Amino acid sequence: MASVFVTKRVNVYPKIMQPTKIMKLSNLDRQCPTLMYLVFFYNPSHNHYINNDDYVFSCLKYALEDTLSLWYPAAGRLSKNPNNGNKLDLWCNNGGAVMVEAVTQTTISELGNLSQYNEFFENLVYKPACNNGNISEMPLLVAQVTKFKCGGYSIGVGTSHALFDGQATYNFMSAWASNAHTKQGFKGLEWHKPMHERERLLQLIKISPTNNNSNQATALTKVAAIQHLYQLITQAADTGGVMLKNPQLFVPSIQEDCVLNTFHFSSSMIDSLKRRAYGLNNLYSSSMCSSFEIVAAHLWKARTKALGLRRERMVCLQFAVDTRTRLTPQLPQDFSGNAYVLASVALTAGELELISYETLINKIKMAKNYVDNEYVSTYLEALEGSGDALPPLRELTVVSDWTRMPFHKVNFNFMQSHANNVAVSVCPLVPPVPQVAYFMQSPKEDKGIDVRIGLNSQINSAFSHYFLNIS
Image 1 (cartoon, rainbow, N blue to C red):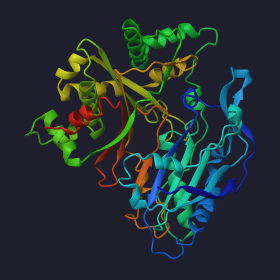
Image 2: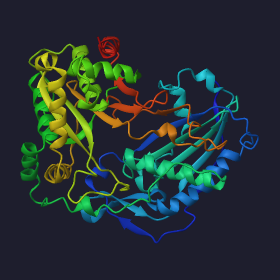
Image 3: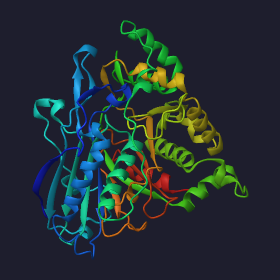
Image 4: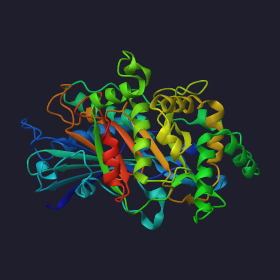
């Protein structure tokens, strides 16, 4: 394929500057302070304004200036706090985002199936250089507009995971696109004015700095996600693995031999799985569980079977739960920080193979219902310590639900604001832990799910067989 050439690079600042301040981050924000990338693809337009090489870039730049006036932390930088063990906080200094413009002689059709990851996509995002590891110089928001030979274009956006979780990213993208459409006289997606302060989560931490070991021991018994991880680490050590004295929870190491795949699960396939779980003649099977719950259960079974583990081996399913509505009092839906924690279910491989879908779904629901104030508080305490990254844990399956964040409907196509004028595809790039399975709303059908997962090449074929076989 043809190369991608950058033709312009600019810093983008808030239209209305905010006073400089330090914003405290929660331990959920500090878990993964790297840029997470999404690439939006749009087909060629018949609008002669869009065919102007600078049109899309200029629209997005001016709209981003407006958007950063409200989302001012995104124009800031991360900063290490020497008075708090050099933990990361957010320096709201109006340092600006970075936007670049690029061109390529490649056509969008040459990229093939846009839902499948392609290494060429890495050229469609801007990756800022990290000067000697100085995190305080890294922008928290970057964007690249790439014009293709065919007239189509892509928009690659990177946002720091220390800044936003998936829900907050979707709200930010919706506001940015809406502001761009407003400038063109169109109406964009609905969005919510953000609430940036983390006080509600910070107040949940009751840990004493001199009592880390005691609190971590307490977390082991109170929070299933932590307890199960320790059990998996112990199991790995018993079979020749390394037993870490102070593992950094929820930061697995990356396995090099990993192939990214996207599997489409249609609404009819999901309905078939639900009837399998609750009976062919059960008229209420579609409402007995969510699409996430049935597909997560099915994926866990398929991946474990593909791994060919011994029946006595402990296996674990962990999945992200949004705490916004689970805390008392609740976090506002427009909370812009990280609000997800992991819930967990553990069985032996033999038990998982034999357990019915209905029983397994009930276990997933129970694990989700355990997430309350005390669960989140203890979870946050467990993240206070620092240590080694987790060893590769084949027995651990992690799922993140993006189905309520239809990124393909974030309309960066400026031809018109028609509801059906959405992205051809939105493709996440390689995440920090590629083995995590992401459930995304399918652009082909609102009730379908696209499952993106990283798989060891040795089990790729077996997993595909078991996962797509729903008979």
